[in-house]
Length: 354
Image (cartoon, rainbow, N blue to C red; front, side):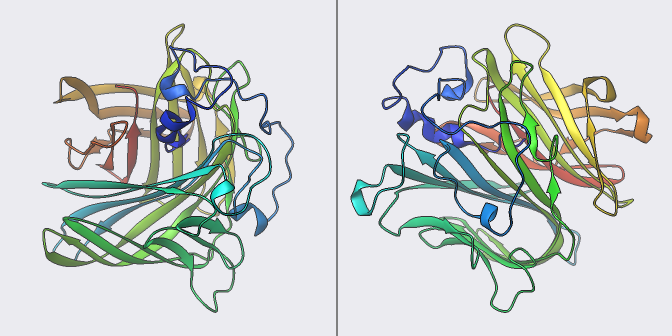
């Protein structure tokens, strides 16, 4: 969905500011009441480049990039870059330190044997972190995702940079393909009770550049994926976490699938099939067969790191498995996120609430 990716992390900060406390059952407060904020409703007409920038009326939004990369020797890497904007209260943005926005960045690099992640927090209004539509730029400190000068369109030619104590990456992302509106023309349902987000993607990025791990640099290339979502209450009170896949098929299609787990039923399962030309088809529960096959023990948790995924209507039957089963994001709220591979493609998997 990414509900992706994780506006929920900063909801630790929001919990002290909401008028109503988060229901105890909901994952990280994402089911808490948001009546004072703008609401997600069907029928939105997206406007670009404006919608690449922030949406201050909504409580939560994020810019999220993943990349599946290889070097010339066949070594496999995964890269994640996420920026979250979180409003502490409803109302227009304020200048300087009066601004009530909190920004959060998550970045990570994964190989078959190593996984490193880092996070940063920033207060809005003072320039340390922000996002703008034209020219597109999203940043927190020196972690940056920005349109290159002279690009034909805001997301056609991008640079992605981040670093941590034991890793760094600097990638060039390009695409001439159209954006993809997820769900019902960008209205992405998260439950049968009406929770939703506005959600679009660019699943056709090609990435190239450098990745460094433990002081060793690698020249890499491969497919990348951008997700953009914003909402004010993306989960229901009984929804406890999610399993989210973004997959690049060797035959040219792209696939996004997510399952939101809940305490009072089997969960909410949906997705989007994206053909090689960028045309989409919404997938519903009856269209998708998803189940975990094997788990990995991490810090006392059993994390599903090998899955069976079938889309019978598309003649797809695959077994995505983690490149590195120990890709645990040990951050403010821990979760699992890392690259996956399967016979016929690669992708990314995020799992929360375990």
